[in-house]
Amino acid sequence: MSGAEEVLRRATADDIVTLARLHHETVSVAYRDWFPPPAPSFDELVPQWAREVAAGHAVFVYGDGVGSVVARADGSLGRLHVHPSRWGEGIGQVLHDAAVGELRSSGHRLANLLVIEANVRARSLYERNGWVLDASVPAIEHLGVREVRYVLELASR
Image (cartoon, rainbow, N blue to C red; front, side, top):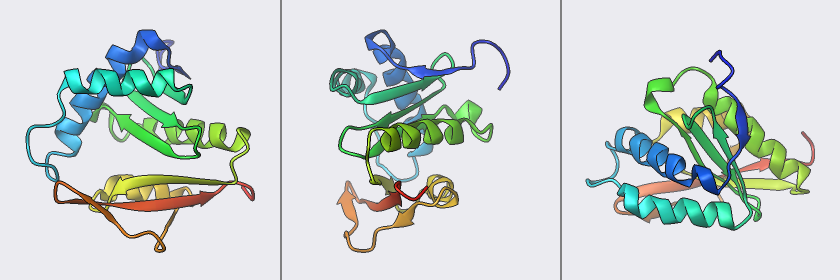
């Protein structure tokens, strides 16, 4: 993770295509064991990312588009993606910390996120960072895949 190009910054409208490409390439690998093909198309993802950026959410991009995360105005963390070729380098932690920091500085006392129940890699990252499974909210099932909700107390950290 060295080099001048390896920086974390706020995304702009100019990053939408890059974010959609990252999302597509990441979920095509990371989620292939859970969701039936085909993965969302690049063309479907572009307007989704355009909405995230236009909504004024804190959208972060890492490097030249090898990572992304969104800290939403409602207190949720989402779309934490790291390109599979860069897994294990700590980029996910950097993105996580940026999003949580943004949620905290925006005055949120509690953050939340949804994660695929079987996604041990992601769940481990969140649990190492103090996120707790929210047993009061039932799992959500979509296309045969269960997502669970995690929460993180921000006021005391």
